[in-house]
Image (cartoon, rainbow, N blue to C red; front, top):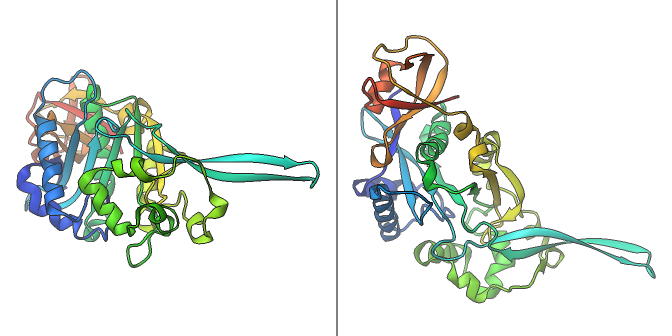
Length: 338
């Protein structure tokens, strides 16, 4: 396969801008704003450049799907090492309260939304976007799972908990029923305006203006209640991949569009848990099971799909994968079953 995943550099800004233009909006981690994307790439560059890492810091790592033969950029994925470090990471927690009236002989169970910062200190995988023309052949799975190999390869840089936010339901005009019913009442902004402001300036304005008391969902219109915890239709495949890795939905939703937040213990994520490291053997593999493979540290990180044969002395991979990785015999390869 000629496709591989590599770390991003500032030279990839034009490609990242092109991908952002295809998202249709609502991707907080991939804003349709060249200056904001340039700042993210600079942040990622600085994160890759930090050699010492004993604890998670406020860092971002941007990975790109690249055709190793043509240089075409086909997608992006991101890993945040510690959220809530610069400003609080807000979520809504969907809870329930039961109340009984003996006089009426009725018990009501009411759902409510509470503003929380329960996920501060966790790591996050996000910014996953694949070019619409490439959404077949397993490239999305390669791009998504390469983030977990990166985490396994640099484990000390990431927290004990890993989360992912999925884009919520929006209409054809890019507006969110959830935001229109709730957030707009307090901020006087449309969803696209609030999303763009958050991408450029952070979400401190949420702390400044959002009500601190629980909000009963029964007071919201049905159009808003129906989308709480629901992913955008284009995000259902991403949710399925996250669930296959062991992520679960625990009633946390995004404060802007009501999309689901899923979490997992980092060491229990399937790709992290099942990955192994071994030196690359000189003789290429000609047959064997398919696997996800990676090599290199930080800026030199590369990942690809490969045919893999594990032996006592090390691991053999097919010649095309070794070329895509730029891996030489003796280099340590991390691999995980497909």
